[in-house]
Length: 210
Image (cartoon, rainbow, N blue to C red; front, side, top):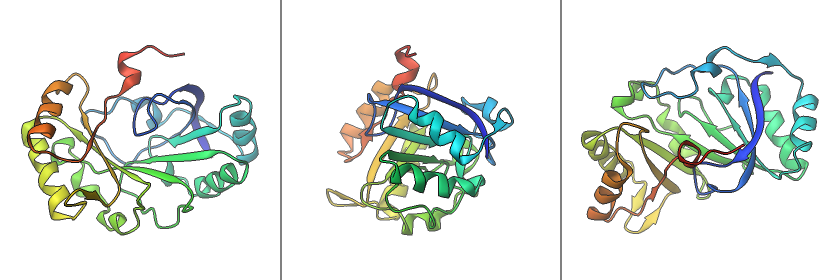
């Protein structure tokens, strides 16, 4: 597998935000979102075996692991890697951009899946069949650029039945695009509409971590 980087840091997003985590960033992405902050992962990296990756992860002594990218599911060996990490006692998060099918992902993996909005430039690349495979403990993330984007997300959540009354199909996260939308504006809209979603601020953008 081609790996961009492996490092330990504080988990900056999702309901796991604030926890120490080992990140395995895979090389390669099939999308080009307008707000992408990891363009270096498009090409940079080196080939590593499954055993090498697992031993590197173990060396940090942290039990929470996130497989991210780029888009990890472009490399099919990632499926086996995640299974082995879980078998070795790790809690595994998979951050995926929503364009690749998640049906074959081990059901023990916590999936954090983006749904790209039209203003990301990539909505047409989404595999919305993935909504069939999302589990209650999984998380769907929307990155919001402006008010129009927010209203699109609000309607998408309703139209696809992600919220039924106060019950969510899974955990739903809404993130303000960094340096584009103020978190206080997004939080105000969420409160006004009484949306049972989680404001998802990228902690690692605000707090320097090792």
